[in-house]
Length: 246
Ligand code: LP5
Ligand code: MN
Image 1 (cartoon, rainbow, N blue to C red):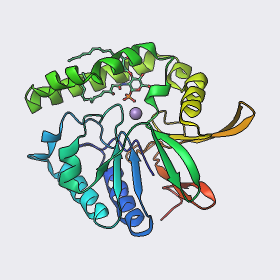
Image 2 (cartoon, rainbow, N blue to C red):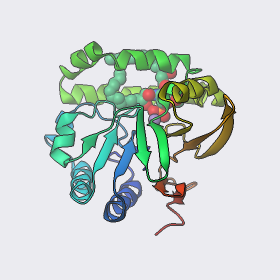
Image 3 (cartoon, rainbow, N blue to C red):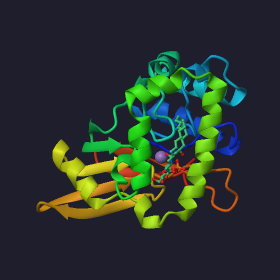
Image 4 (cartoon, rainbow, N blue to C red):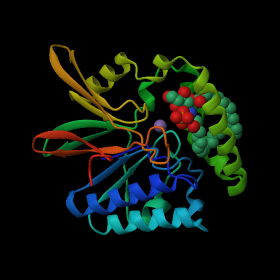
């Protein structure tokens, strides 16, 4: 599973690495889970009507992978408007968020992760607004180009606000994580979004719990090219760093 590729018109190296990952993983894995922020922004499934070359490439890659193994697309904070049309056009499936997954390596709660960042009050207010079905229906009545312009503005605003926010409010809130684990009756969580890959072990109600965080991908960042995924087998999850794996 992998998340936070943030694919868009920029970032050819990231796109190429993701397409290579899709190809390789779909030949070996029994399922491929992509829990969110696959796209830098997704303003509605009519994005596929006249796709730019970069998007055509990604759609073809998803479709080819989906022909070999089931591929699941989950909503991130940037691409939560991915819908049934995109799934049908690529032969992929939609993934709920959060979702309990049963694997050879045990049961996990899988989520994009933004919902656990409850200390970021401004973001949670924004999230409540844009996840409201009525707001979405209204937004989708606007022409595609107008929605893309809103998304660009919102991306700029987000980057500006993030540079002002304290780093710790942009991480998950431990109580929010525990509450999610408890309510789903599981002890292990996998999520992305925070761009802080790693594994945290903690205790809750006398039980050992684990939180695995997926890395973000940016192979076009000359200072810090990065990316990777988590593979789960009978032994549990294992990290694969794109720089070390070929
Ligand atoms: O994405 P990232 O990592 O930069 O930051 C996120 C949070 N930001 C977002 C916004 C997205 O980046 C932009 C999404 C564009 C595509 C969506 C398309 C359809 C919707 C169009 C929306 C109008 O999710 C950021 C978090 C950060 O993660 C860490 O968790 O801090 O949160 C914010 O930046 C939100 C601001 O703090 C609050 C903004 C309030 C703006 C309200 C005005 C809305 C205008 C509506 C116009 C119709
Ligand atoms: Mn995200």
